[in-house]
Length: 173
Image 1 (cartoon, helix red, strand yellow):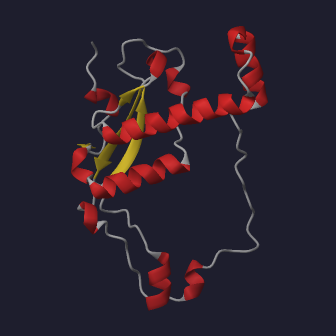
Image 2 (cartoon, helix red, strand yellow; image 1 turned 30 degrees about the horizontal axis):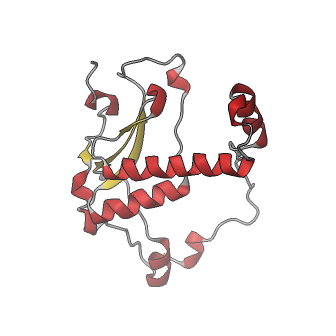
């Protein structure tokens, strides 16, 4: 295997996903419209409050084995571990290029287990309309915190078999 195997095509098309900043001035203005009693709250304070709340949710998701119920019954966030399919190979491109042969990452420090952040709103007390259209994409810092915590204590999290639905972990009461 030579180094050119891993070189990216410079002539290939480029695609960059457009990101939308949710904590916008428009959201702040709509908040003040709905709750005029907070007119003294500045935009920066508004953003800081939301970021602080989100960081507390992240820490709680990492600490709690059974996950965290989001406010207003929006659903549940939890971290689970799973064993990846044996057919999937996790290549280490840098070492493979240096040594000239295929080298894979083995996750030996977690006994080949991987972690995943799940969001579910199925089988929950209050069913939401259009719940199948919801998607949860964790922030990069959230993913990195979870990865670090998972390596330190991977046995803490619920082990999920492939094909098992996360919503089946919760009772319908």
